[in-house]
Length: 513
Image 1: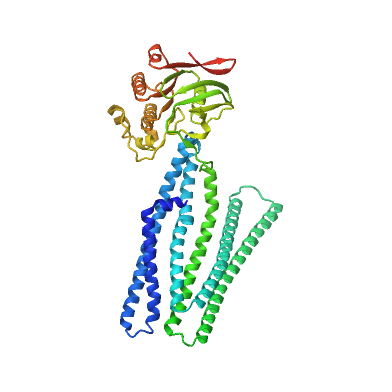
Image 2: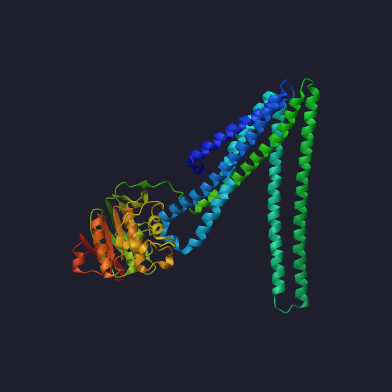
């Protein structure tokens, strides 16, 4: 997650600079608070003290605004990166769960902003200011009371954090019990059943238990909140008593130093309490980050990128689906054009999924440049376009560029005739089957991969459009594997190799014609 903090280098530098300058004015406030009582020129001390306080408050406000803006930027970047990461690898899986997927991205990004990104940025600034205050007060008064006070505040802050955690848990439990109580009453009041005396007695017992449980939780909650407030009063009293003893033992201490010591109590309490809470929030968010990485992010070591795809070889590969078995033993070169003739869509989609690694062979191996395909990321060098290539409920530009790139990428033109047909359409319901095929073909152009595997794309268009795009693909792409149900001699003559799928004893076999 920290990569998002360091990615925004400009805002991060501004945040650190504002923190540093604000810390300087905070230090000046402490120093001139002491000098105000011992200086001969009190007017200058008052002016410097007032300016320092005003500038500290203003800079602190600007710093918090920068932190808030970085949090908002994180939400947008996180949504974008996570969405792009998932669709690049598992594009075919999104269709069935797009709503839940979107909700999880939104809720997780907001959660991490509030519980990880913003607390981490605040932790940086609060630790800096605490260190500045510690040394400034130490040099201004004495390090002995400052060290004792900071340790005491830290211990109290940890205890306070534990109590806060317990209070939050009890509030959650109480809220759940109250929900159960409401559901129980609603169910009882809305019931049309005839209730006899035996059932009435049981219902009264359930009702009484729910009330007792709620009362017990509320009582525990009140007790802990009372303990928390009592501890705060006790802590402040002990600190004030300790400071009083220090003052009596050090007769030479000035009134300005006494004021600074009193200030240090509130300053340390404010910063250390915030820091303890920030550490708690960050530690709590680690489980969410782990869950996110487990569900969405690729936990495996990064795969090697292939600069140039020379060949994809199927070595005695067997692919199974619930209804069929497909055997493939063939090498596809990236500088040749192949036509695969097959009337069974399930067979050819199974082969297409093997190319994009969404289908794993039951036996045999798929090799890329004579190396196992599992070791490589070939998503930028090989593009599979088939019926399950998802069309988003968004405009044409996003539908083209979201597939393998960010939406600000320029769309490469095909022809004015087809571009004008699509550019005005904004929603899924506005797209015809022809529009969807044109979007998928536009993706191929935008990707400009070494090799394209295309299933029935041109067959789904009218003859004129299909022929235009087929001819364009043969000229535009060096490596092409086109799977089609409709073929003729003229079409076959345009390809380097012709393959077909034969059905032999209920097993499908890919062979060269």
